[in-house]
Image 1 (cartoon, rainbow, N blue to C red):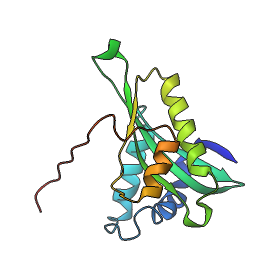
Image 2 (cartoon, rainbow, N blue to C red):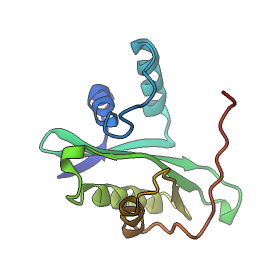
Image 3 (cartoon, helix red, strand yellow):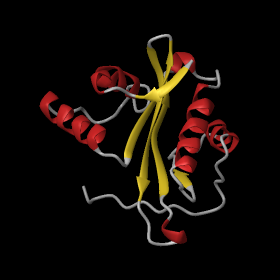
Image 4 (cartoon, one colour):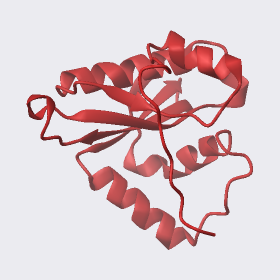
Amino acid sequence: MDIRSVGASELDALLALYEHLHPEDQPLPARDQIEAVWQAIIANPAHHCFGLYLEAQLVASCSINLVANLTRGCRPFALIENVVTHSEHRGCGYGQALLAYAKAFAWDQGCYKVMLMTSSKDPATLRFYETAGFDRHDKQAFIAKPPA
């Protein structure tokens, strides 16, 4: 098992893994748009996409964004998104290892907290995040979406 940043040339592997995150997601735009977004992501020093690899295969991933902050002694905070493990590799501890890596990265960057949200109501998913050290009772999340 190896955890590292997803490489610039690994876009297709990441997109294939994301099919296990939201199987019924919106269709992707044209390839040039996808590649432009990917280039913006990998060029942004505050955005990190970590992958967990078994041999050379990407089997889990998450993104973490560091957010500059003027409170808490000007310490940043981090947001984790797009946590996914390939469906054939779930239940093996890879997601836990990946989240531990992402949190350690945030602590090394001086973050005073790391947050993530899930829309899942599945008790197993909630236990997964609690086991990874996240407290679902500490704060309340509010989401706003653009009108349809």
